[in-house]
Image (cartoon, rainbow, N blue to C red; front, top):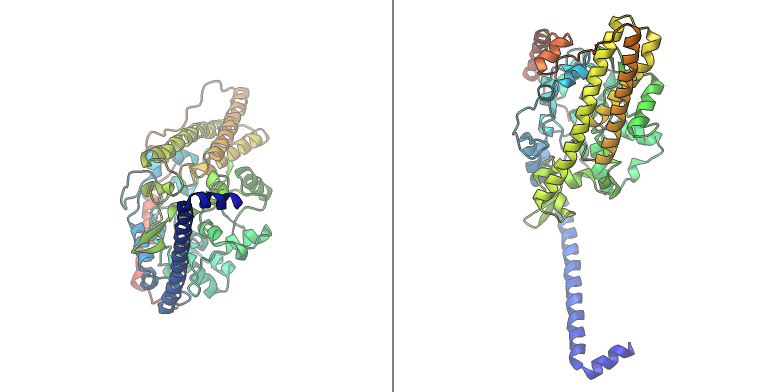
Length: 487
């Protein structure tokens, strides 16, 4: 302090400099405080002007009267963009046509009939109705994440168990609104909220209380209630998350094995198979963004400013379509550099995926050849387990969104073990086939084009389309006789 006084005494201008600097700092702090107070008062005033929203209001346009910016951006989810860089509008990208190997991998399961890239939230109900995977025999639980009508019906019917017991057709007439505001927001408090019980139940079993989650955590958890791996319990098709042993691919695999669960028996190899859904949250947890407390919404629904108002962009899409608003908030590299960084990682994951797919297609064909030549069940059982585990791990990555970018290292590790297990199954099959007198290489099913692969596994697509036409007639009757939804 004395040293400063000596300097000021010798150089008076230093004192004036300190005075003006201090005054400037105080002025700026005052401006900041005034801005905070003003924003808080604006928030209170705006809340006072908000129109009340009924408890089960599913219509986004009604919420939009209070939140026009959020609703306007949400409406753009009808202009779906690819999860790459090039937009493709609202057209449907057919994964089976792009990669016919998938038809063989899912032989005997509904995904071999029809599998398209997910479009925006605005299409959730439309696409669920249109896909060949939904039939009159589909369980009602398949509606759970397609519409805010699902939690409304759970409440109306007396709980999730009663909802899950219904068939897809029984619930269909009242499932009309696509994913929207009521899926994630409490209409009374407007806070983020969990509306799907499976997430709450999974956290309760793990001893975690979602009620204590921070706002930043909730900006991920509202996504995690649907973008996860799940299964239907045998009793009443009750929807649950398989996290009791952990959320890693191997942990979920072990959990399913403990239940002796199989989603279907493969049409060629007869292996008891598992179908991954879309374990985005599980993979996200292992990535660097989760470790840095970045939320799903930070990248897929970044904050925007308009007319001095800060709000969340509800046009949920790939961050590659808004690198400045999402990636460059943290990363200072140029847009081209960041985009290339993403695609480089995705290309490497895609390369590993294709290696796993090729090994699995061949393993299924070789297993069929072994059965055809009289292989014993005891000899086949450990081989089928290897195929089951290999395909589960491949699917854990393949069915997640982002082409591995949410956690590239974990995806590469999981795919590596998938390739290892698939090749171990093929080696065991080669030995078994040799013992059965088969020395020649088994030719894999044709995977050059979608229709050829479907014919090779015995799918009658004309019959499937005729059955779907009958369901679409039922859906048309729903729309024609729809009554106003009670609120």
